[in-house]
Length: 520
Image 1: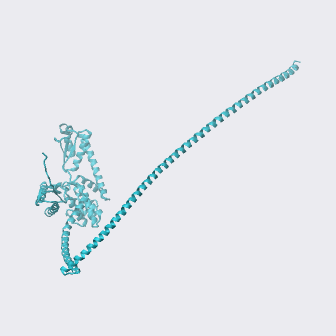
Image 2: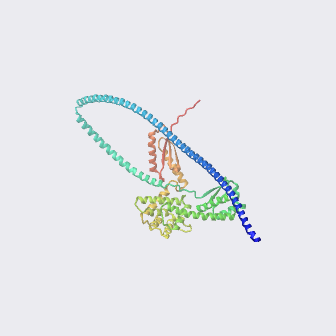
Image 3: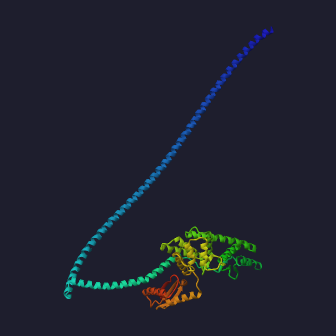
């Protein structure tokens, strides 16, 4: 019974709850729809606001772009207007200049017409004068014919004959003078060509062969060079083989040796020791040995550079070393490398003129004194020593013969050998290239001055430039400008005839007039 009652009650309760749920859901749904509608409206309102803002932004961007474009357009328009204005000004200036030029041309045209008119008047006047002169000339000719009894044609013929005879005499004398002058000038011209060839390879080959001077900052350094009880200077002299002279000469130390290479090693080593400041026997030996190695490497480079300078190739490395050693050798005060390069150039120039092999000529000229670089323990003439050396290193037979025969120790077998001998003599005879005894040098200068002073009107003479120039001061009241010019030639000619000298001597004649007054 109870179960039967529970079932209906349960059904009633379900229905009641369903109804209540339905009512609740209806109310909640209405609220949700209302809320959704409100949210939709809010979204629509915000979208409209955002669209309006976006629209305003786009409008502003468009306006900004429009203003920007307008500004650019205005700027470009202003530039074009300015350019147009400048062009108008230039055009106006050109028009003004054209008008000025046109006025100037008109003015010149008027002036030219006036000048033309004046010239025509002068022409008429000149023609009239010429006509009058012609009449007078005819009258004078008639009078001359009556007086002389000769016609004009006879007078012309006689005059022509006289002129022809005179011309023949003058031409004969002129031809003789030209021949004499040509003979005289031929020798001078040959000497001039040789001098010019020498000057093309001019160089200062005279070197100091005994001493080198090393500058020091203060005399205090001399004490450090000498060292305690002289140990530093003794060590330095023993290692280098050079005499070190420390005397009263301010801020200088003198190195003395006849071997240029040893003296150069000593000079560079001493300069490095002074710069380094550490001067003691061990350091001295280290620096000297390092400098000696560097200079030996430098000699090889010097030989290679010389070969390249002369355009020579395929030379034995040992010969290149000997060429580099020439830099530290000298003969009669003349640097051996510079002398050899000069002989090479001169030999090449002369070989080119004679259409001989220029390369072989240069090689022979460069190597002609290579025997002087061999150790002095090897005895014999340097030409034969060089002959054996070049033969040993397989130089061309022509080069070998030229080296051995340039002092005629062996017979010459090719013209290049003669060219090497001539070039060697030319290089050695260059003024100042080789030393000469002091007495002979002084005597030559005295002879030069006495010879120039032997001319009449010469007051004083001065030999300068080691005898390469003589300056002659003349008495202005005895020698005028024309005679001074002739005097310079006469002195030069007399020097050529009576003196022997290398190169050339410049003769300068000075004529000076002085007027002196005193203000009291």
